[in-house]
Amino acid sequence: PDSPIARFLDRNGPGLQQLAYTVADVEAASDRLRAQGMRLLYDAPRRGTADSRINFVHPKDAGGVLVELVEPAASQHS
Image (cartoon, rainbow, N blue to C red):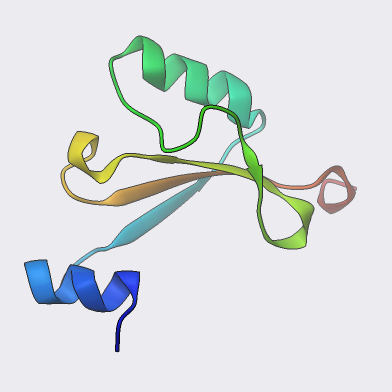
């Protein structure tokens, strides 16, 4: 099948493809990572599942792993 995971496995074989971190403020976390020279996939956070806000660190800046930053929706904090 043609999917991001299938392409990853074709290129790299079995292993860690994606790692997600829950953060309190995705914009602040993104800014800190950019200040350290890391590239993020989006200029501004996007909406993820369950109305979360997300961004991703470019795999080339994270040892080949797609790192996801997830700020849960406010309703998930209550």
